Image 1 (spheres, one colour):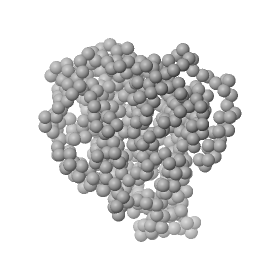
Image 2 (cartoon, rainbow, N blue to C red):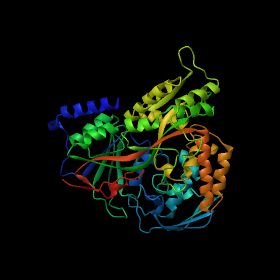
Image 3 (tube, one colour):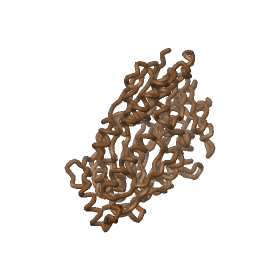
Image 4 (spheres, rainbow, N blue to C red):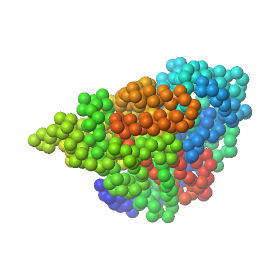
Length: 512
């Protein structure tokens, strides 16, 4: 199937009429980036989908920002102190302005955090901040946060992608015209068409070289490839099937950059389902999926097999390489587990049916078809249903599915992911535990890690958490995708990041 896609793409590229293409106006200092779907909400207190969390950091600033070494650097906070596990003190940069010219002060930071907790906005992100007791703003440049209990992951929830400071008084309709203090200011959004941002004249940091960025929504991967080949778009990140990337590598007007990534592809189970509540069934499904084969055939080797939600670069990462719970491709063992669980093949060879919901993304649909074929080998009939992204994501966040393929983007780089994705306190709408998995043992370890300020003690807890998840399999960790960027050669300063974010656009350049 993947080879057929490549042949179809190559034929389409050869037949494309370049003369009729809508090329860039050389006088316009605008970058067109192709994205697969519209951001669901550009209020940084609300949006949790990939597009929202990638565009938001261009419009908004966080208190701290992640670096590529899994550490934190200053952003709005020039420095901070944690005098005890229940107190965080942030000292803000002075003179920072919002894009409307209003001065950003500690009052805005306090409002942003308070509004996440007091119902001003309705958001699943509030669960990440429920350990806050109160927020004080003793002067314009100081924010003091008091905690109900220790939460070592809390500061990660104040970084880019997860958090952005909004002006005091911003309410539920803020998403209609978001205003931040970031390098680019919001211009417009038309659902399923585009989002437009432009350079902010009030930005406190180095001014971007690019005047304007248009995030064009193009759901179809072949169309995205054609737009890049024609020159009517400048860049895409992780939005093309590997075969199409290979075809575009040969185009002299385009460049391809790639490097190890941390974006995790996984399949989540709804463990409340009568069939999937049995861990033996979940393990059998995992054993039936030939991950190495899929990585080499569908992904052209542009991924690393995953055995944890954490990427290997994370200091608390645990490898299951020498652990008996390690998942390897073993359909015979999968069949034996299903037999032992009482699910025997019928006369037609089928044990039972399961439904998998997917988005209409081409690679996701191809993955789902391959998984369908592989599960058929052990007697599971997988019924596939594809939906446009907004509908799929709404069902995913509500837990309205049996199985669903998804991705963690950035969030899986820090320990709070365990609480957000697997704690019993994080069932929708309070968090991202979309499969309704519950483990008192896991919750106890997370509480124990939160109560400690010793990094080694915390790491020991997180290792045990990963071991429990490897045993219980509330989800199947498939692979960490490489970050793959295809861009026009007129766009310079492009570099990949492990999480595939858009931060480089703040410093990228254009030639004409």
